[in-house]
Length: 143
Image (cartoon, rainbow, N blue to C red; front, top):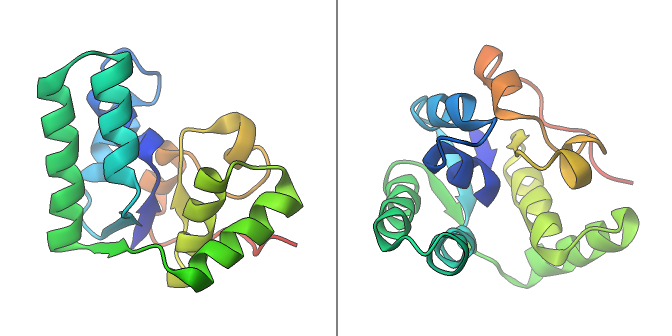
């Protein structure tokens, strides 16, 4: 199983994104998981930034498909507390830290297109890396 953040869903939708091909392929491998917050993040980008209701609908449907066929982690108090700890330790937004905490909870790797905040810190892997080894070890637990 691979845990994906909203950036992977968005890249799979955006043909101009440099991570588009790998993200789209990763979404087809099956065993996926994400946070319940992903539906709000992808809707926000598609509706407000892209102004594309059709893309917004497709993105929400992808999140619902993950919920049906994979795992959607719901934010609860322990996850929020762990996310706050990760955010403090790494200077991340609570949103990014929540994806790290979600992947950590399931013990699976986190896929992200966020080079600056997640990949560069070893907290996530780019979709292309996970295509070649989807069952790879999750990122190390943050300090």
